[in-house]
Length: 508
Image 1: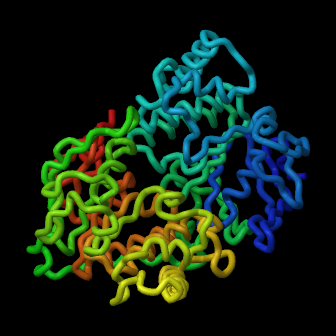
Image 2: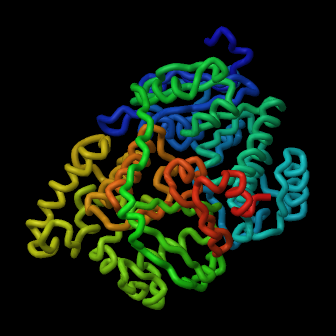
Image 3: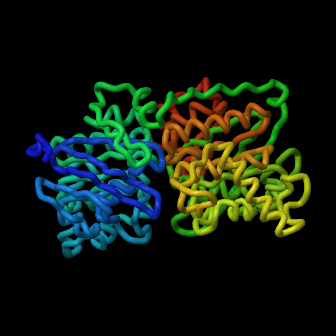
């Protein structure tokens, strides 16, 4: 028993979880105090997700015990977890866009209430915690920050003693992050404990009292955040000093050559939840990184679809190296030297149930990246895919649980390194990359960002679509903002500030 057991809300002792021969959690000892904001930090694949899924009843440990408020518990499922006072807000929201706020909350409540009673409780709860929301409004009409409020309110209505937040700021604007932190600090003062999972070290320093670091399924250390720098946190997490990015060095000769120009690009929204693109105009030179900032749901997906060829338009809308390509499909654009990294890793960038070399084969089927058609001999190309996949894994520090795994068996960060490496293996003339380091730890993020800089330094053009303003300003030469399907004027990074970018995003 912990000597401070009267202050301890949650305590894990010797928690172990295996998946086959892979040990995700190895005899974990961990505790969260009452009213504490406690951060959980670690590389992708360190065991964070497994641990919190055990706390929320999504997984059962193979060994060890969990004590909640001094009582040993066996959390069998999420409903049981909620009844014990454990709530969780996931990184990817589980809301139905066509339903109202109150309807979404009603579906998940263990206690059934009338619509009027529920809406009253939503209003009271939202006012109490500064989470302003209209219970009758459809989720499709809400901003990403407002959708997160719905998820939090859904948890708060069940009076949690422990609230688990998984990467809560990954899709929020700067102002929304400020508002979220106010809410979490107020919850903490009221006695609710917060288990905060994030890769953003400066946020952990700001919001958390203590931080526990996991590595390879083991607890490395638990420290008070006031006593440790972000550099030390990073070093403990990755097991070595995190190398700073090397700046982009580009010859002036590249800057005079236009790689891509977009002319009055417009698209009607596909459905009621989509966003229309309104006369998008911009150009990018070889050797340039153009950062496109914006809050999720403002046309980023539609812009990527139009640039990649998933959405076809007028041929003159998009010009690549003086060739009109607006009417060409994605396969043809790839053959011209354009590569795309979509936001969604699973089901879009990869097929989760296929092995890595099979995903490589599908991507490059019909692609002229090996001096001869990749489709010439099927068996030969399959073998070639295995060889190329091994190269991608080696060059990009992709850490696999075993040789030739399924895509879904990689952690998010390692899968992203594979996807980026696969695209760059083709040595593209132009790379269009959406959310390259979303949910990725600092070690993996540094590797990915350096590869983007290196690609641009070699004279290639890069369009970077990101919600992470730190990333936008760290990598980009020029910056613009997409908001409600409109693209702002492009500004040099030297002539615009993060605050100004935030205002262009439509932040209130």
